[in-house]
Amino acid sequence: MSEMKIKAARKAVEYVKDGMILGLGTGSTTKFAVEEIGKLVSNGYDLVGIPTSIETEKQARSLNIPLTELECVDRIDLTIDGADEVDPNFNLIKGLGGALLREKIVAYYSVNEIIIVDESKIVNQLGTRVSLPVEVTQFSHKKTKESIEKLGCVAQLRGSESPFITDNGNMIYDCKFEGISDPYDLALKLNSIPGVVENGLFLDLASHVVIGTKNETKVLEKKAY
Ligand SMILES: O=C[C@H](O)[C@H](O)[C@H](O)COP(=O)(O)O
Image 1 (tube, rainbow, N blue to C red):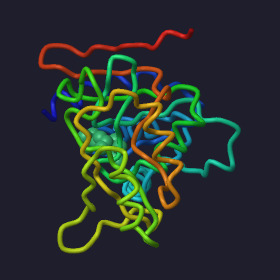
Image 2: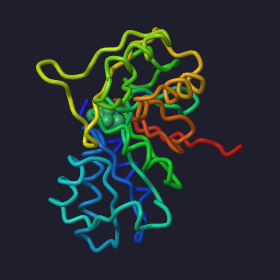
Image 3: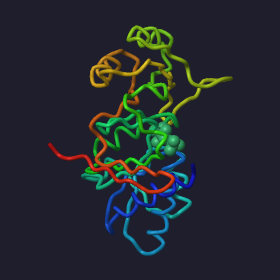
């Protein structure tokens, strides 16, 4: 499995050019990409990163990758990030690592968003392999849960002994839908519930998907319409 992730990460980093501002995603796949970006910096590339989590920030600092904040740049040239599910329209579920909010903000401001996954993440319909992470405020989270469940899912608070708290001080409900037939409609409905901060549906944000398989690394590029 790691081998497939490494292959996908290395292929994505081939898109990094000297002088770029990079969004640095989060997760076990992206970790390999950040490692490769660190090597480019050691080799003299002038790169600046914007991390999507405290975990990635720590890794980037340990590799001496120069960092900045989103407010300090006009655009992000390229973000490399992982995903938990990828559908045939390049729509995604993200957030099993808890970083969905910052990841979505960074993706929104990125000219290109390359998603790196192993083949197990490819699905025909979102919501069939994993639950959908939804970040909510701590205040009144049980009420928020009730409203989320009215949309047709079972919502489970993340964290066994104590609740998982995100880098932004919020909680996450993992919402099990039996497949998501209209992700656009669901994303709108979720984000209109007070208390929902963001949901893990990443719609029309990925420009490329790099899939590591046992035998090869496939690069899919979304065509502009
Ligand atoms: O919050 C976490 C992110 O969305 C990750 O990019 C996603 O969960 C994929 O992580 P991994 O590469 O570890 O499977």
